[in-house]
Structure formats: structure tokens, C-alpha cells
Length: 292
Ligand code: SF4
Image (cartoon, rainbow, N blue to C red; front, top):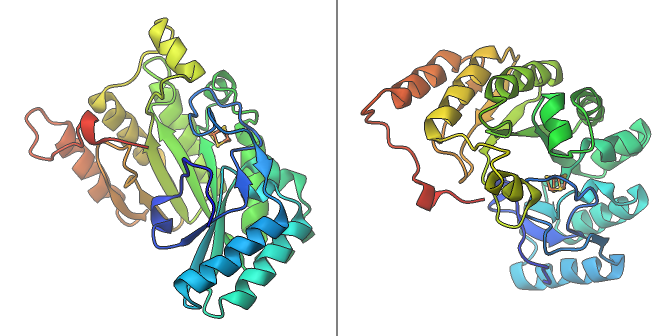
């Protein structure tokens, strides 16, 4: 198995076979993102990926149940190439239950509804998509390259094709200046998407990124742990979802939480309030233990 390091995967894909289909991210503009500082975007040749699939079978046997396609947005691959990979994966691993990947909303917008349905039917069951923030001012500042309205459209296309959608957001992305907007606009956007899964990360400033320069120049003030908790509280308070698993279990978060909304909303808010109290007995993850 060949990997161009570092590689990232969602926490819930821990047990999955990681297969590198693309290297880096085709968007590669976000000012906070360090995952691509040292990687030039590229799609790996199909033959190479297929060799890795066969190698995985000889290494791990036929029992693989989940596969996650790396890297930053493997959905940007041509539909016919993705279909070829999916078909080979399900043929080689007879117990395979699902294949997942990271996606940009722009990738979903570029594909036809028919293409996305075909991919779902071929076994692409879950897509993890970074909304990051629902506030257009923040999205513009961090050069996300897409606004909230377009992201909502991309997300709906993915869900309409039948795939499970997990939306990632970043607490603290608006810094001190826009923490309220980050919470409220992100909640409004999530309410309109109404995804079955939301994963909250907390901003970590990666040395070498444009955002890091902004911090050094005093143009961006990073929220401290209390500020992040306040923002998370405001976000959760404003979420109006039908049936959504909300998690902040990523290693970047100060307070790992999880629950189903709307059912557990009161409990989640209660835990955040307890953690916000002075001399709270709820331990927060220390800076030393936070990571991406
Ligand atoms: S789209 Fe995602 S992976 Fe690509 S640069 Fe932005 S945050 Fe990084």
C-alpha cells in the first residue's frame, strides 16, 4: 500500500481500509488548511490504485468491510474512474459494506444527479463534506471558494442520490470577531441541509498557513477554550434538525461530546454549561493533547 503522507481520515473511519485515490485536494485554497502545504494535487493512475487494492487483499484478506478513499476530495475524480474502482473493490472484498470519501460541495455540483446516483448504486455510501462555516463573510475570508448557498445545493444533491452525508464544521473559524456569526449562520445553514451527521472540529492554526500569518500579524484573534465552548453552545442552541448525530469527538476539540439531535439537545447544552462554569469539574482537552 502506498501513501503520500500525511493522510487524514474522519474519526469514524478508523477501522476502514485507507486507499489513496487522490493526493492532496483539488481546491487547495483554504487559508487554514495545512493538509496540502506539502502536497501537490494529483489523481493517482488507476492502475496504481488497483495494484494497492490487490495488495490490500493479500495483506488483510477478503474480510474488509469498509474502505475510505483518500485524500482531500476524492469525489473530484472522473465518475467513470470512481465507478471502476468501486466495482473492483466490491469484487475483491465480498464482505464490503460501504465505501466513503471526502467531498467538496463543488465536486457534487459539477457532477450530474445521474452520476451521483450511479456512484451510490455502485457502493459509494458516505460522503464527508466540509461546510466549515455557514457565514459567507468567513467563507470568503478563508478562501473556501464556495458560499453557503452553493454548499447547501451540493449537500442536497449528495443526499438525494441516496448517500449518507456527514457535514464538518469548524468552531472558532471566525475568530473573536465573528464567533457569533459563525455559530448562528452555521446553524442556519445546517438546518437547511438537515444532514444525518455533523462533525464539529475546533480551529487549530497550522504553522506555515496564510491564517497563521494573519495570527502573527494580529489580524486574526484565535478563540480560547471558553470562547469555543460559548460558540458551540450558541450553535447547538440554534440547531433545528430532524434526526442528526452531532459529534465533537475529533482530537482538535476541547470538549468531546456526542448525541442525537433534537433528542439530546438539552443534555448537550447542559454539559456545555457545566464546562463553562468557573472551576468546572468537566475536564477540557489541554492544548498539548489537541491535534488534527
Ligand atoms: S477544501 Fe478541504 S482539503 Fe481542500 S484546502 Fe479546503 S479545507 Fe483543505
